Each structure stands twice: as C-alpha cells, then as structure tokens.
Image (cartoon, rainbow, N blue to C red; front, side):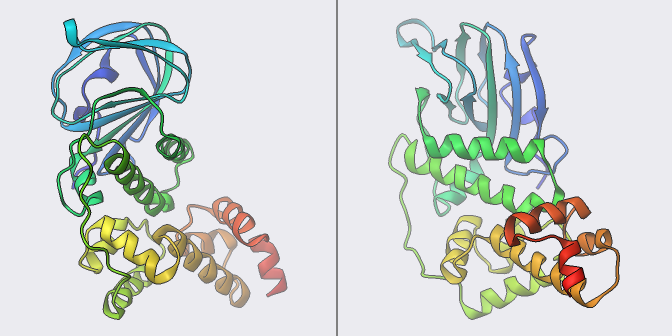
Length: 289
C-alpha cells in the first residue's frame, strides 16, 4: 500500500495561514499522515475527504465555529481539546485566532481493522477531550520529530491504538466487537518469530507480522499480547537488544556495526535504548563480556 500523504487530506494544510512545521511525509506510513503546524485565523469550506481527521489543540483557548446556518456550532476550545471530522463529509469551519495543532489523517481501513473488519461511523466533535487519544497523538508527534526507521513497529502500534480508541470512544454508534481469542496458536507464533528473526535488522511493520499469522493488525496485536505479555514493538525491541548484547559479548565488530545489524539506526540509537531499557551501555556490555 502507498504512503499516506498530503493529497489524502482535506486541503486544510494548504491554506495560506497554515504553516506546517514537520510531518510524516517520506516516512512510509501507510494508514496515518501526521502534521504539526501553526495556524492563523481563517474561514473555509472543504470537500469530503478520503481520511478521518483528528486535530489536537496544543495551544488555546481559541474559538472554533463549525458548520453553517442553524446547524453551526461554536465553542472556545482549550489546549488539549480535540476536533474530529469523519471521512467522506463536507466541512465548514472558522478558526477565531492563532493556534498550534497536530493533525492526524487516518484511513478508514485502520478504523475497520480496529473493529474486526466492521465499518465504524465516527461522530463530528468540537472541543471534546480524551486523555488517551491526546497522549497517543503526542507520542506520534514525538515519533515524527525523532524519527528512527527502527521505530516503524512502534508507530504501527500507536496507529492501531489510536484507531481503536476512536472506534471505542468516538463512534456515532457503539462499535461492535467480535469474539476475542485468547492468543496465537503455536503455528502462528512460530511463523511470527521466524519472520522477526529473518528481518531483525530491518524496519518491521506490524502489518507484515499480522500477515505471517494470517490475522488483521488489530486481531494480531491483541492476540500477540495475550500470548507473550508484550506488544509487538516491545517484543521486537527486546529481541534486538538481546541479539546486540550477544554480539557485543562474543564478537569484535564495531559497536556501530552491531547496532545496524540488530535493527538500530546507529550507535547512538542503540546506546540510548540500551541505557533506557537495560540500565547499561554497549561499551559496558562489551567490556564485561
């Protein structure tokens, strides 16, 4: 599937008063386009979009007016407030002042996968609050600003969690859930572990792991955690650190080369993750070998 990009948005990011600071363009994200920007006052009307739009207000309060005529709604939205626009609907909006935002444009396929393949109809929201959705948006924003190719599994996990939260908390009608299995079968888990072992040095999208288990992303993520007690990202990261530690203890390859061979972007990336997760550094592991 092609990367989601600017052409998949509602056109809001092309307004003269909207100045994007950075985005996920070029990172290969297939189900989410993320953009952070500074916005000035505007009034505009947008055609139906092919993606769901979730906006997190980073500053405020600011007055936002949505809709036209008797159907119009106006609200003063504080920092942390959310604006939600479902896929396929026209949008009329007026921003009453300067604002810093993070926009998440999410595919309908991601919403469906979060609801066991069933369609999800989201509600139109103005100024709602959702601490979990806010934290997921912030985590995705940080992932863009500090992008490492090895974080691909982590970003896919965050995207799935955001889609699931929207389906659970922000659906116009309650999202229906299918029967939940307790975990992966031995065959599925073996197939997933084999794939991770083969591609430990590469960016590894969760979709590829789910395909190995013949499951949707949402089903796989839930059943994988039930089987291992960890998210796919945590599990892959643990295996990468274990492999790096073995190479450092038993080999003489430069630390930077070990980092690349274990799926880290560079030596500093391995050092940062090892210090945070294991409380040590590659140099210490090698010395104590």
